[in-house]
Length: 81
Image (cartoon, rainbow, N blue to C red; front, side, top):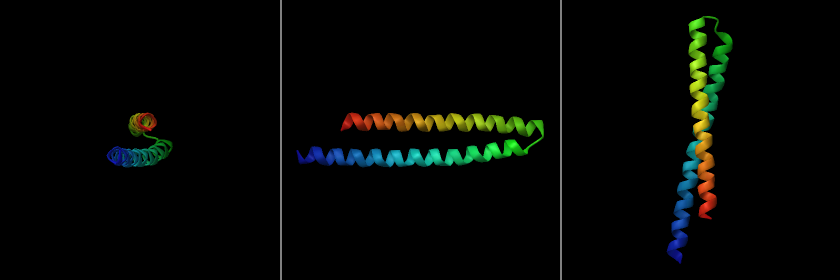
């Protein structure tokens, strides 16, 4: 019984660390996205504007990935409890 409790504790700690890393990735991506939007609003050269559009799309995809991963992690956590 005590071994099962310790296992759940280690699993919960691992899930907490994984969630922390995902949330940190979300924050960094959000900061990069804000910077990319600022550049987009500043540039007038068509090539630079295009580059910003591609970067914004890429960052939005990365942010969506982090959101999906956090949701899956939360679902796994609820299933483990």
